[in-house]
Length: 189
Image 1 (tube, rainbow, N blue to C red):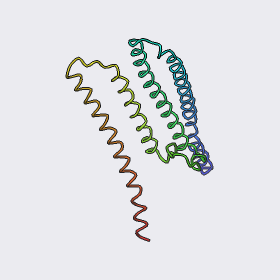
Image 2: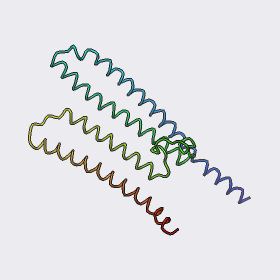
Image 3: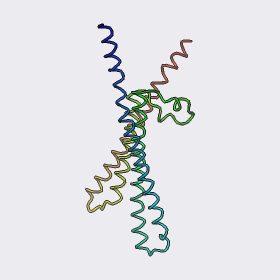
Image 4: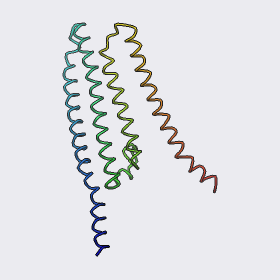
């Protein structure tokens, strides 16, 4: 009787991981919604540019500035949708099941998630890119009234460069650590 209750409880406990499907489906739906909204924005952005050549210099400059701002917002939208997609696929692979098509595919392995650190690292990289795009979006509209403002802006650029460098260095370090055991195994044989 006790063994049977233990089996029932463990079965319930193991199957409770399926609640993650709610987060997987919700993230996927939101990702599709963000892709849709951003694509509609791209359509309207392109249709608004039809009269660009016929504008006077001042009107062209205003439309140019607005277009650049909208393009940055489009990039931001697609990056956000990508974060949601990676999150959805990662949760599914970690808690529910491996995705067979992803393992068999010869395409990029970016969507193949092996562990929680993989998911965290992929999300962090895309979120960092979103922050870079947001910084660029704010930089477009900045007015430099003093040397201090320019110095703050330069400091922000330096910090972004440092963050990208550290991300790349950590990725390079992790990939070299993954290859070292293989090389040591080859040397033993």
